Structures are given as C-alpha cells and as structure tokens.
Length: 364
Image (cartoon, rainbow, N blue to C red; front, side, top):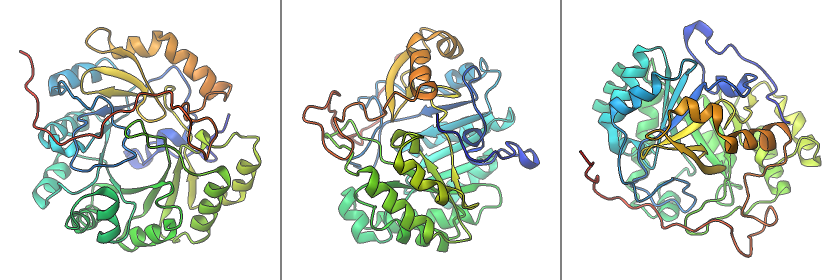
C-alpha cells in the first residue's frame, strides 16, 4: 500500500490546509470528508467528464444537506463539485455558510467561468476555504479548441483565478489533468499558474471517462517522463500536489521507484487516496458512491439509508477498502485491458456528454 510521504498539521493555526486529510494517515472507520455532487449540469463539454447521473432528476436541498451533515460526528471537510457546481450558486453559498458555522472546512471545484466580483464577495463572507480551478491550457485558442467553447471563456478563467489569489481568506488551488492533451505542456501550465500567483498546483492523474468512450492514453513511462519534466522545472514559489498516483503505480513497480527522488522534493506532495476510507461521494439524487471517478459504484442512497450507516455497513465498500487500500489489487481503470491502450470492449456503459439544461422541477 502506498502511503503519503509526509504528515502535516491538519489544523495549523486552527485552519485546515488543502489536502490535509490526504496527507494524514487516514484509515477506514472515520468518515472525515464528503464530496457533494451538487449538479451534473455544465457549461463545458469535457470529453473526459466523469460527472454522475447526467439526467439529473433532482437537486439536494440545503435542509437535506444539513440533515446529512448533522449525522456525521467526525466530518471535517465538505467539497462541492459538479458538473459546473456554480450553476447552483445560491445553494453552494448556503452550504458553505452552514458548514463554516459548524467549523467544517469547505472546498468548491469550478471551471471559474461563472464567477463575478459579487459572487467572490459572497463566498468570502460565507467562509469558503478552498476555491479549486481546472486549468489545462495557457491560451484561449487551444482551450477553445479542446473544450469546444468560445475563446471568451479562457480570459474569464484567468480573471477568476487572479481574483481568488488576491483574496485574503480563500485558498486558491489550480488543478491540471495529466493526460495526452497536457503531457507536453505541463511545465507551461505550471509556470502560467505560478505567474498568476497560484501557490498550490494539483496534478490529477487521468481517470478513464465513462462518457463518449474517453479512455486512458498514457503509459507508465510517458507519465513518469511528464512528471520528471514538471518537477524538474517546478517554480520554487508553488507547491505541486499529485493525486491518484496509486491508480497507476504499484509500490513495488519500477516506475514507482523511479519517481521516489522526485517526490522527496519538499515542494512536491504526494497525497494518498482516501476514497472509501475517509471520504465518500454524495450525489444530488441521494446516491452514495465510493468515488465518482475511480469507483463510481452506488453503495446506497441517503433517502433510504443514513449516510453514516452506509459507510459503516456497506459490504461493497468494505470489499473496496480491502482490495484498493489494503491488498492493492483493485485498479481504478477497471474497463481497460492494458494501461496505455484502449480496451477492445469497455465494460462500462458509455453515456452521453453532459448538457446544459434548465433546472428540472422537484416533486413536492
């Protein structure tokens, strides 16, 4: 089992730091974090999208979120994601404010295009801890071509990141996915983010998507080469966080051994996987998933069973924890025959791309 290299003070100065749970020795038995998929709707069309339940039959209400949070005595963090989560801005603001009152750290994952100065002010007032942006390009043309959106979107993202960096209370994180589109531009994106003032840069390993048949395209060697170039060129002002490395590298593999000198850089942090152990994903329809990306298997629904009971009693979850975290035999890339090559017959059902639709009416 691959462990994080360093521990950090989870609540230094009374404030939880980014990835502090992942950097601690989080074991099964304490549900410390939940990620709420507020909506699957989005204003982008990412081919690698892993959003769940694209038909989106309902949106969790604030009261329903409160009822769930209040049953989790060990909860330290709530992450809000999508889709583009800020399509439900008022709900996000209310959840952040509620969690802040209870001393629970909050994070919002966004593409940044819907943020305005007024919305920033409201998120700051609500007590948001981390604003987490997706950034895979350094110019409007390539960004527009890949995401199939207007070139006007990219300047909005840059402006939002700069505004977040200027905040005295919000911690700004930029995430870049390491995949075929970015493998040769990782250092450029890193320098671009650092020059914007970003001091935390997360590198997310590519997770094969279930929409449009998007699959893993990089071998272990190609990933190691890209990581080597990135860490060698790391801006000393900015810390790099690597996520989901364990999905690619076994602890006894030659590739993992090759990465060890790079991961000893004090400005490079490997955050261990806590999915299933200390974190679960709660979707807007009430479904509970082990991990929306690597293990999007529904293990219950909060409208049938309380979340804490699902966490404590789910046999599927217990088996996942054994195979993924204890025996290291589970692969997040379950529908690929060979890493670096496309599967002949993916074992997942390919779903349509998420569409920007009007909010559906709720029953009652």
